[in-house]
Length: 392
Image 1 (cartoon, rainbow, N blue to C red):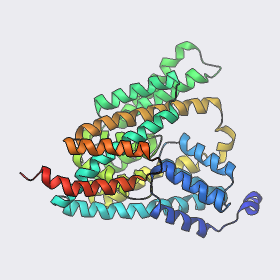
Image 2 (image 1 turned 90 degrees about the vertical axis):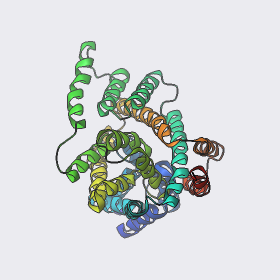
Image 3 (image 1 turned 45 degrees about the vertical axis):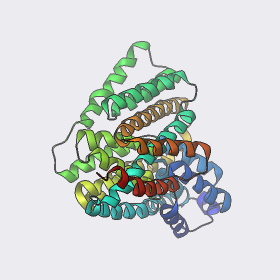
Image 4 (image 1 turned 120 degrees about the vertical axis):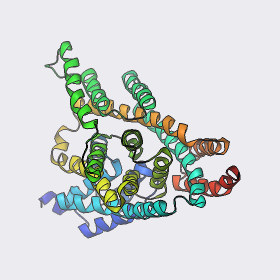
């Protein structure tokens, strides 16, 4: 261990793992809230992590694909305890919500046909549309701002996601390259080579997206590894990508089940991305849940641990930042497009439309309101209203 680590470290690895386990068990509110808790607890209150290390962790988490809060937890584990710290912190953060979604998956698979469960998800599904819509709006304001190039990328992805009802991975890479070439073009570049670079990526990514005829678990593993490796942005950024693969391409779940899976992620603490465990369970039982979760989180772990030593040197280069800005705008556009796709399916009558609108208004008016509170209220609403709407 380096001398720097020895002088700055004020806590044991067991203490950090215990903290991440607790945050994974009780931390609600999505990636931004979870990242905020880590700053409050580890930087301000306990002084375990320096402000500079925290900021580097946040930047790397936003640069690399995968779930932001999980990556930040992995990076903070890496700061003083290197690979072992990163591994244990990441596992401790994800494992509580994994077991919760597997338990909910079991209940859903066994009792999903029961009318009370349908009633709960009737209300919750509509609330989820409102939550994702509000999240998409906030992300758009924060990441796209008034930048014309980013708006063009954003709108392109919004429209293609809505029309195709799936997320096209190579468009993300193309958006990143466009941002880089436009904002911080390398010196060797001349105008004629731009198209060649973008085109070079297309066949590779298209090949990645084609269906693979192998046993189901291998198929699940490949699809979810792709989701973990291609999705940038907050936890909800993975929703359109999953929708495209799980519902449209592979037909593993129907729309109703998919929206219910997102709802499950909303009502459990820890990273929103853990919805992959629920989906994996519905497709192929406990083994499916394990494979889907491992495949999603492994790329995010590698993308955090491998670049960590080099990140201090290169993370702030204009070319890197421009590439990330382009990809982030694409991710936010895809989230906004997926809101429209999911809304089309989930809002089936006047009560569900009301729930979605009220959710947006509440989140707009009360900035501190936690999403799980809305989800619980929507579940109660569903239990009351669903029987009235479906009594005939």
